[in-house]
Length: 261
Image (tube, rainbow, N blue to C red; front, side, top):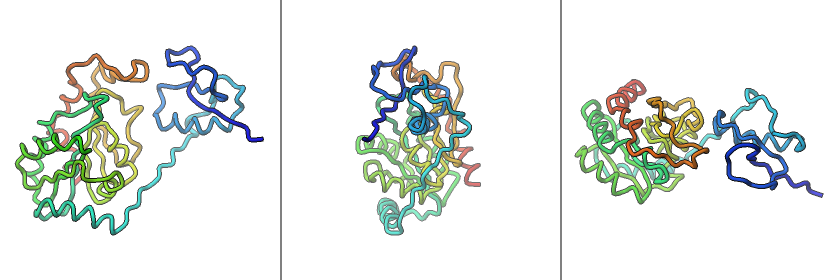
């Protein structure tokens, strides 16, 4: 007979949504652990005695996160390269990706559009061997096209909505730097060796920072940040995301120069 195991975070005495007694292995949610460790602990709990409450009584220093590596093919890289060269005739040696968008669930995670435009201006003035690729979903095309139009830079290519998820990862394997809001692309990029500059504000990199040696976190550490978390159902009262506005384009540009040098 197969023993069924249902493992998950249990409320116990916390202010969480109640799941009743559906779980055979009740895990104490720890809001101080990085999310990857929390998920790994759910797996480790399957090996433990379910009668112990709460689970898991495991030393977190012994938890090792095994990060897979994304491998692209020569054919895939050629396809993505052609998308770039079809959109621009500029010769380049380096690719810098800008991801100006974030999920509409938490819109105040977005760095201001005018900051991306100013960053493009800095890059255009400094480098003559780069191409800047704007990425996003189909629904982001209008906003990325607006950035492209206002920047008036010949080295900007808008590929928002033109890449499938795997093709986006292929682009990361070909590129030097990604600048992104705290959103999915920052985590996808961790599967590759690209240098990943992630701009954090309403959420904390302590819990949600991408797991990669090439990740560069930019975070202003305001006293009101992070203002969204599991305890407030990720709803913030904020109407002015100063945490993102205080990350100035000059600082991000300096970080890019540091990496390229």
